Image 1: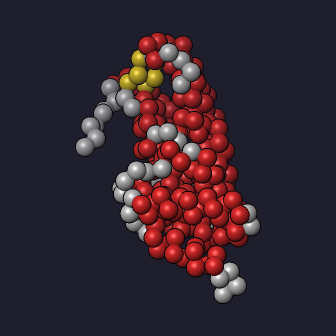
Image 2: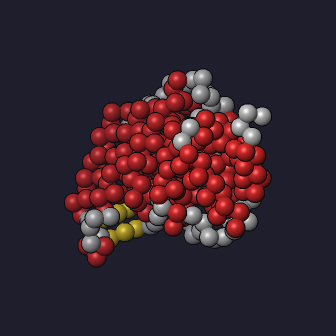
Length: 256
């Protein structure tokens, strides 16, 4: 069970200052915060999690009510990139030089939420590839993952989060990137049946249903998919056998 961590008075005051600012001022204050954290070699995961979580909530509220508010679409991408770059830099520093408050993985999860809005299912269900604005989600997630994959993919909690987003219909490019990453690094495949393996199968189901032409146009991709499904069947991942049978049937009778 996850332990609840609360903001202290100074952190709460700083969060209040940020989220009540205009768009430009929010950007400036977040950049100032990151600069201050770098200078003091402090990773305040608690305040960063609350900032990103609050901004995500503000965007959801504005989008669901049809209001054009301060937390705009491109702004979400800027915040995720800025904080992601800060976290990524930390991976090259000696841990002994850092003071870390909270859990870094919590921030990565919140940044993915901010980009994908997968914290609010009714909004996600309404998204469509027909809306050009929603295609930004796919582009941003793909860029975010490509840039920070060395920090993201080795963490099972983050992989599970990425798979949860990757199964969304609008995330076509992102699904391809996840698939290619998995085929190159099969050491990150789940080793037993769990919610990560189930989410991964759902990603592969969506990949096959919406993008099977991309798969069958290259023999190596077909083989990679069958290899992944073979592993998932071995650990009895939910839905793996059904999808493997579907793929095998199609490949043996492509004209049917």
